[in-house]
Length: 430
Image (cartoon, rainbow, N blue to C red; front, side, top):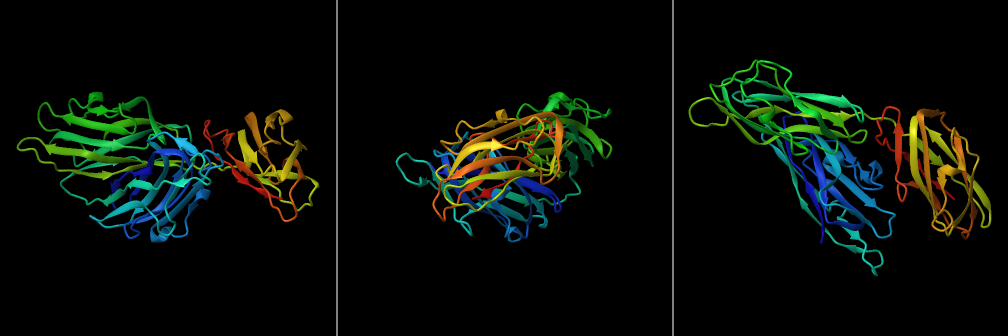
């Protein structure tokens, strides 16, 4: 079956940030895909994209040249010979926009074959290069809200947090006068933030009678369901009253973010008379997970003759407070024959940190290093050298690249709380 991409929807007022999730189905033995993502640039302004949950998927897979015109291109491929398989419902990226449109406007967000054509190639035994299986999609929509002076206001706090940090978000209300029924949902990205105990609390006294933990259902990941009915007269609260507090932990990668948005079903009814929904003016929240600099590792490039023995230095930049470093080094083994790793120049680094079992047969080395205290290394320091015998013919070219297969990339720092901060791996060429 074709690859299915489901794009979420959102809403907000002019000036708000809205983030849409891209979930996939039928991602089975996929070798590569490419597409364009489009939106109405008079309604939405591109802010950021965060790839996730897919090997070798990073910022380098996106083209940002035309984002001011409402176009983001994406292209990905894997080194795995039989492709990658990912469970249905997995989120592979999140795209965030600033809302610049006027009240009542809306923009579709969708996959397109212009300018980058849609192509999805999966592995099929016996088929050279695989088959293009196509793509189906559920388009997303962003709607620009209109402010209604008769509606209640629900304000959700913004936060800037670091990976792994626990934090709280206050949900406050204003214009809350003589309310007899309150129902709405809050949606957040559970891949970026997750509720932790006590999950919900009520820090301000004097709230509506019966509004308690039974009124705020947090059983569904990514969703907070609010449902309260007055058992007496209508409830009135002072402006900026903290209706409830949510307790979260940041679990997403550095640089990612999650909106906390008011979504349907929404019903706000004043006490007495016929049920009439007066609605909500929602000021959605935004949680940003702070950026932590990723270290850069650079493999040197070199010219050589067939039969030469060469050693390529690997240097570092922005190597600060690093506690864990794991990755794969890969090259074309028919062109470069691995000999050894030498000139180790990093505290605690030994030959045991290099998995060379497949270095000769497949051109793959796994690297794993730990330092619980965190290490700083000056820029341009050579931390080791890779030595090869050149097997290729004159004119051949081989790259030595950083990859996350079969040994995944994992880089952690003192402040990243066991979260991967990424690796800027710069390949070398022989």
